[in-house]
Image (cartoon, rainbow, N blue to C red; front, top):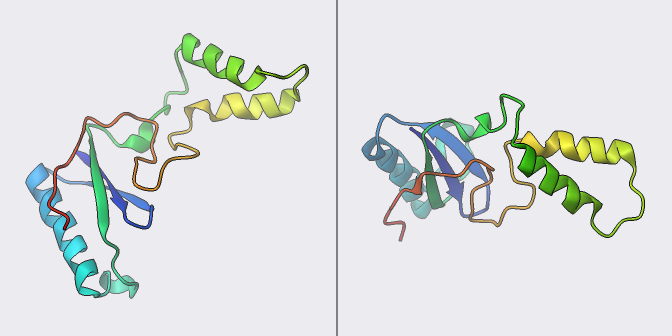
Amino acid sequence: MFYEIVYEDGTVSVADYPSDDAATAAVMEQHNRAKAGVKNGPQEASATRVAKVFVYPTHPGDYGAGGGLAADEVLASVKDLLKGRDAIDVQSLAVSVSALNHPMVNEAEAHESKFKMEADRELKLELA
């Protein structure tokens, strides 16, 4: 399973753990280091508290890796891009359409998933 760890500062990382128990142990160790004000391993940076953890069956960065999207999704996105415009730069439209299968969300909230792939669930943790 893959786990998207969302930190309190809004950054994320993705880790692969064999089980929820293994993920919980690792995430809680990270969170407890941050609460204690200690370093985040050999990087010498301070550890950061964890806000949420989302669970995926495959790596969320693999979203759109095949290059294909449902025609309805593409059409709806193009309509949104054209809404309220009399003319549009075709190169800009091409870039926007090309970005539709990018795995990351452009404007995600600070403590929400940064990936377009829908998570199976959120890992329940005691992050006090």
